[in-house]
Length: 240
Image (cartoon, rainbow, N blue to C red; front, side, top):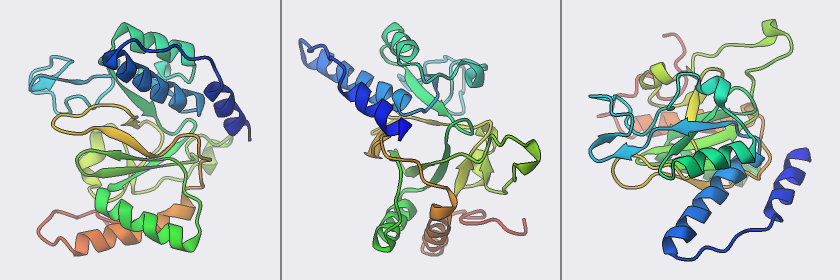
């Protein structure tokens, strides 16, 4: 209830009118980012595509436009709209990541598997929270977090846990929790497209286990239909 109330208050805030198309686009961009912050997603500055490379100017950057600017991104991540707005206005091209395992987790699946899972969940009447698409081929399901229990012994690890340096180990389903992050809309990625909301951040976060079975089943089907792809960890990598 507090999450919905906070979001409703933000929607009612006065908005400035944009003078031209570029200003309109920037206003929409700012609104989307502030909506995520107000919804409780901790945000931090990220690199963005620049020419044929990355704004970080690192030669051979392995994840151009997809990584935080600062190594201290977990500490810097904030839900303060004023702080996020200041970062954005300081660098109008910046992407943003949201740190997972603080206020939310993200279940990250192949795009086609995500579409199949959404259909199944809808038929079953399961409430789905915020969902974003990430070009060219991923879908992000935002859920409640299991990453910050009061008793550290209650935190249960999972073979699907995804950290930035281990993303390639889970080409099927990746579970972003403590120590990980995802790009948040409206970030840009190399090539066409970017990260966009399919279902907005104002939606209540579901428990991850209410989605997990449908997502793993869809990932397993996705892997089975594409035997020419490397799906070593496509659904639930038991026994690895």
